[in-house]
Image 1 (cartoon, rainbow over the protein chains, first blue to last red):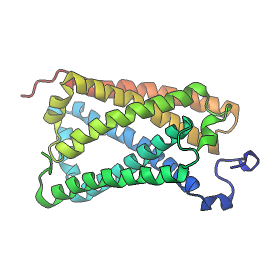
Image 2 (image 1 turned 180 degrees about the vertical axis):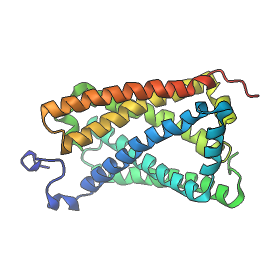
Image 3 (image 1 turned 30 degrees about the horizontal axis):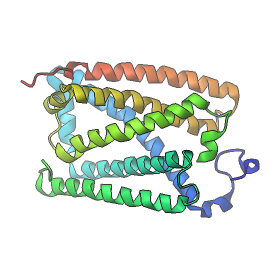
Image 4 (image 1 turned 90 degrees about the vertical axis):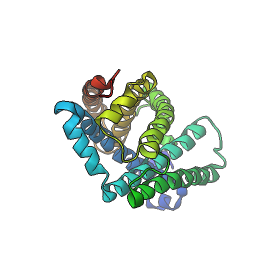
Length: 136
Length: 124
């Protein structure tokens, strides 16, 4: 994007036709979600010290096994995988790798996202259906 | 996304570099963390199983690195986003940076406090 048009980050509606701009927007949204989740996660895990012998933590963890929350967890996995794999693509491009094939790079990264997600989804839905871990 | 990464007056070189360093750390450590918690221990996470995991020196390291790298990466990322929208001037950006450093240090201390009883934990 041209420097002239960049008073704020994402001005210029015509740019939104490009894959890269959607990749950038989703990267930003998933990043903000993950940042907020991290602090929530720190608080949840710290409940282990709130009451004796981790009572609060144990009841929270039981609550998180509810099917709706397992599915929500799976949505978080999508955010993690997208942010991680698009991040790998950005680092590679910073190193000058694949700058000419950035669209192919993006879709390869998304392919890895889909494959990894399939594994997590299989484990999550096996757990919802049977109450057991598919790999444990 | 490259434009924001390389522009000199926004964020600074060291923040840019550490964002990359923590990114690589997070990918490796998160892969371990998620494989253990989501794939192998789904439905079995409680105070004792977390303790059994963190008691292992290797996993203590994984969790502390995740905590430190995660907090830096998250706060620096939020800082880059906010600097695009309201914290656009040098003065506003500086206030944001200081506030986020304070939040980060407090969060790291609180996170280590939370993990502390599990380091070297003996399952009853």
